[in-house]
Image: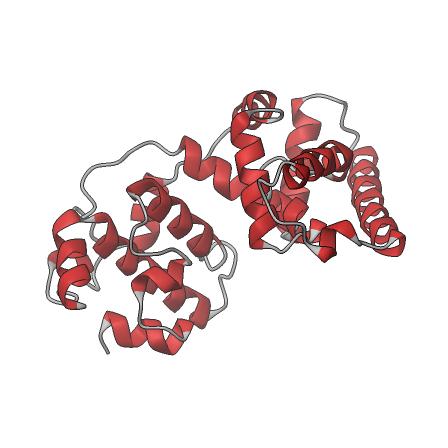
Amino acid sequence: MGLLDRCQALFRTASLYEVLGINKEATEAEIRRSYYKASLKVHPDRAPDDPLATEKFQVLSKLYTVLSDKEQRAVYDEQGLVDEESDALSENCCWEDCWRKLFPKITVQDILDFEKTYKGSDEERKDLLRLYTQHGGDMDAILASLLCGSQDDEPRLADIIRAAVKDGEVDEFPAFAQETDKKKRARRKRADREREEAEEMQKEMGLNQDEDSLTMMIKQKHASREKNFNSFLSDLEAKYAKKGGKSSKRGKK
């Protein structure tokens, strides 16, 4: 079965762009970022006993190989075809190794440094308004998707959105403008519960308020697949990832 057929079977679309949730005009950076976020969900480390997840990971990696290579992408865009015989799409490739070369692990300090520069920046505002429009004003989804976004940031972020609505920069969505107090309380309750769980684990492990304790809490959130953290980590790793060589050069098993 060819790559396009496998995309159709696994992701219900034969469009390489639609699988990643992007359009044909996407930049290389957008393709890379979207590939990372999509592949992270089915990475072998997260689903070691799920054959379907592993297959999806392999297909996503091959898809990225096509779209990240200028010549292959041009052929696909013009003819809708993929060169299944190319070495880059060889079944002998170790896709997990290639993935890790593209996206090396970041450090706790990377996270802290990025958060300091990101919060309150023009980049954060741009991302916030994009997510506001994308999710139709649903603050649950917005906070779960925004880099570094947390419940503590909600008042500040809501003010930014309201100002943008007033200035006509974005549309006013009922989900945001008419959100009930009940939903807001539920969101705060979830955030408080997650914080309490992290603090309790910290006490049980005898950790102090230092980098070790932060690392532990990050790992706890990572293990529970908490949406807000996953969005933050995936986007941050994609942002900090070192540029590798040509995508057509793949390591063998």
